[in-house]
Length: 38
Image (cartoon, rainbow, N blue to C red; front, side, top):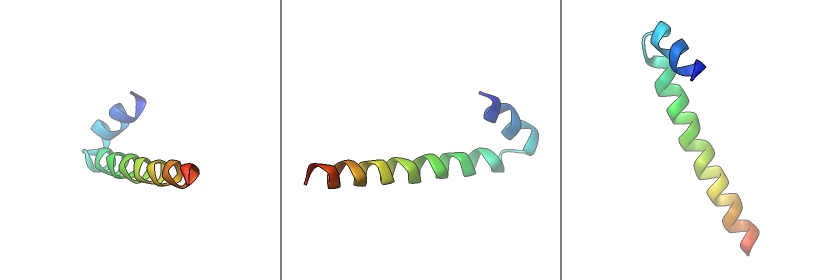
């Protein structure tokens, strides 16, 4: 993971941001998939 290397260089805060973005993206995809079934 390039992001993992960058996060290590940046002190870890960037990695937390990436996890937050991944979680937000997962929720958005889940919502879209539910709406698609309706």
